[in-house]
Length: 324
Image 1 (spheres, rainbow, N blue to C red):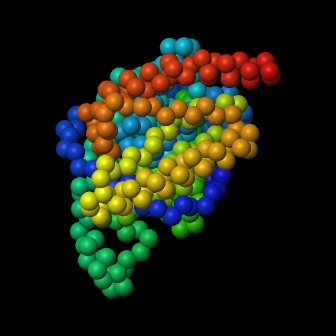
Image 2 (tube, rainbow, N blue to C red):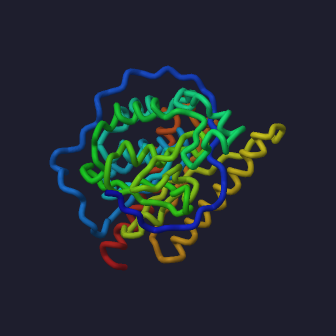
Image 3 (cartoon, helix red, strand yellow):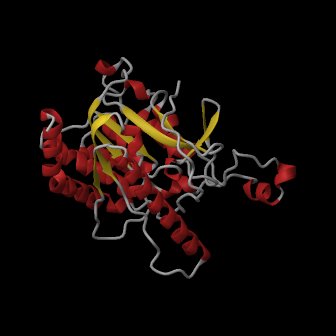
């Protein structure tokens, strides 16, 4: 059973272009098991501190360092929300893994080879759509490798059985609404939220075709509007240094639309009274979509960002407690 909340209109745009970056894949660890004490589904309640992680490719793992910084200060979110790569990072945190283990596991999920499994007949389907049955489930690539990797990490774990409540945001390709998935297999929810349109086929959930969550909300703070305080970890989509190829022009258009949508959604939530501390980690090097070699640097910068914003978080939580 999947729950859908906070429908919003789709901002018509394209998915992230894949970046080729060969990387060796270490042997995956056994599936992360949820704490048996969390066997009962999470009931709807008011949350004290939510952590929302936006779309950002490898940069999204900065949240592993950020959460480590919070834990060092004795803080821990009681609600996690994520979309796209941010959903995978949030899911790792929801299982309770530590920073170093999280980096090792993430390195098995964010490799470029998952985008290289061509689907036989895909090009012909584009050329002769009427005769070869082109439909909303079209994809250029197969998803068996990415699904296998997710299965190795999360196994059959159900979202509602995770130690920390998790909400995964995806996009219904047929309506343009976003979908907040709070129940069901973690693997299915993540496969939906990272499904780059056209590259991968949509994930079917409750009879609807679900694709990458960044399309409708690249930083889904509204999915945490029942928290007293929300920390939003966002990532600005980079612009190409020069536009000398069609794909770079497309990349510039996509980045502009993504960044505008992210800021608009953030401003709308704040305008409605949601208490949000927005954090945009800065990196000293360019980090590609599948740049797994940059993970240690990315995580370190996330931890650094946590230390910088910690006084603001503590003050906000104190105000919530005292009502001042």
